[in-house]
Length: 593
Image (cartoon, rainbow, N blue to C red; front, side):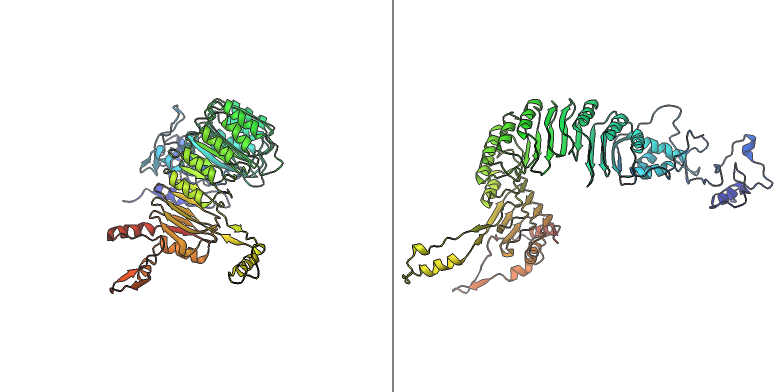
């Protein structure tokens, strides 16, 4: 069937890329050649074909009711600052259907594919909502139909994550936020300095904001003060989650809110006074700078938490100025609902603080005392109080604990899923004292003089420890930096992540991993022989070779007796179980280098 000449001519004119230098020989209304042509658009008739309006704006393949007049032209991207939208920011639309406003300005819920088919605009919105903000603004410049679908995506967005570059302007950020009137969760990645102007912009553009997070890049200054942050929280009646980094200029902080349930503040420094009046606050995280001249009164702050935030369940405080007095102030508030307690980097926290914790908080599920000075006695107190609740125990950077305390915790806490003892089990030096004054040098028959003389010449000898853990529910074990370990035996069927980074003295022949579900083993900074032993065990590469080279000897009756290596148990003879175990173990990944 022959095509209509008008259609053929229109398609040919649409393929023209560059306009001619001396005017145009085509009609400006319909695009057909002017010579001998009577334009049907001039007579008011409706053309059956959708043709381009001008010679230099070509029609897109996907059309959306091009006959309707546009209210405003598509925005140009060349003149705008791309600082906010030049990132891989994510626009997340809720799982519910996109709500379209009722009214005469909405277009039809169909989009034609060159007049041959129709595409519902809801499907188009589902496609466009997977694009980044930069790609969305480019898609809005395609045609009016796409612009309308992009507007629906912005209007129905519930979560937005943006990276604000140094080139971006506050007005442009406000214009982007103004398109998302229904936004409830916002995350800003700041690569330039931030002040109260950004808070005012967010408060004005997003009246229904529920979660707000500010992440700071390196060498970026947060100039928001405590008064400005407290005013922002007081004005946002729906705000339930607030996370702010780089709070070095807070000074005085007073936060009062009945809707706030989660508050994270990091890089705090020299807080003169800190007041929280949040009766519904459930989670609090305060991370202070690692500076010795920090003058924050942690004791007074801990006392106020118990009085003004009675529903606290999760508390995290990281400060080098944490002490037993601060822990006693917190436990005196009698927070019986606490489920997570993390007091990190407090080198002055001893077993006395552990006694106060176990007497007040009886339902803890996570306890983090990393960087403290507790001993194995403190671990025993923890195990005696939380055998039925504690599932995560973190004791990294605790130099006074030994492998005996870790083994005791693994035995007494059956619900443990995570143990972190990084940099805790370190090598120690045993000093030998000279015994020459106690031994008679003329007594050569006993040989004690020669032995004591050898001991006196030895400056030090490192004593290493062994760790044996057999646990049914343990999933993650972190032993990074435990240079005091030379023997490790693990029988944990549910273990899937093992961290052995910088275990420099772990002996390859004293390592046994009976963990069939192990997926990740981290062995950076370890010896090559140890890495090879790990690969042999978790990847089962040389199982047959080991079986053939076991040492054996012949007995008097002519039979052979095989010498089983240390810690090795009799394997099952069922071939199916061996194949299943081998299949699971080959999925493990050894991270090294």
